[in-house]
Image 1 (cartoon, helix red, strand yellow):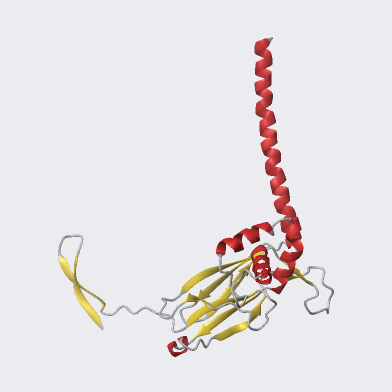
Image 2: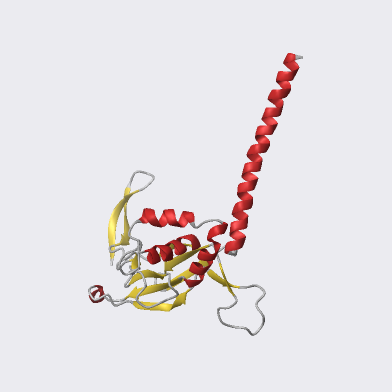
Length: 233
């Protein structure tokens, strides 16, 4: 079905021009959410699903970025063990408490806790296909549970399997997208640095920063002293 409209041309005259009478846009026929688990995938300790793409969302949609941090994972675990989290140990009630605790776990002293938390982090993508399920919370897991802050050691022996040769990463970013036909795709990005390597890099950057400031002060101070001495002489 086409609609004929009058369009003004460059010569100032109006001429009929057909255009679609109905503009059809594709929307999502499902709801997509994510859930976290900071305790190695134990049942009953998954966070409540957080919706990233709702029903009737225009597609293609995304990418939706999910940032993972070993320090924040360790803060979740520490808050849960200290009783500062919610009653079911799923989510931190106070965001300030989480951020302060995550900051305190940064640096060399927090390496063991960050490594343990990163290796125990699990992440899953969920999908709900009918609106009737919104009340009873029936979610369908898409694929297997993921461990976004772990990677295989580069010197792993051939033929070996299991999680013994997995190492923890300091941070990672996952992008979730929804295609025009409803296909869910994920892309995980990390710099490949382990927690120890990332800590050393941050320490070296800080030392270089202070060294640069100290060198600049010496450079400027030397000129000031030289000018003062020349004036006195």
